[in-house]
Image (cartoon, rainbow over all chains, first blue to last red; front, side, top):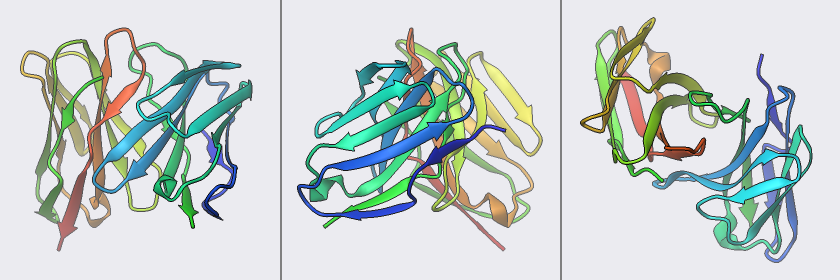
Length: 114
Length: 110
């Protein structure tokens, strides 16, 4: 069965801190994604990666960076956390870029920035 | 990316049928996904349509009309556990990125 694991379900950090959100997939998937989900706004793509050390900006990359040093791990980094980054963060994996491949999501990390 | 539109909320009765609609812009379209998301949980994949017509999977069916830029998810014999948000997501030509709609929150009542 498909498994995408996010390191924390809940996280509380302070403004200005550097925050790391970790995501691991055990499916040998090529593509990985980071989204944030906010009430009334839906899921919005922050960054994605289609290979090790490769990354592409999504729709809302400002204030974030990512790292993919190994195929199974995709990290989201908040360089200097701000209160407007309080949100639910969802990681997803996708087998490859062929059409019709679904994305499989982790359980999410609910991040609060105080 | 796509511009995806779906209703914000719907309510339906246990045992009934409900149809959740989704419209998208047709230029550069290359397939449409439906996901289910229970409160506090991850979205889970329900269906994918790229050709016109109806795809049936048990109680759930998904329909696509490419010419009209329109899809719907049909849920039959509603159960209380079907109370969830249903997310419509489109892919553009040459891209595996998904653009999600804001989701439709379905409440199933006794």
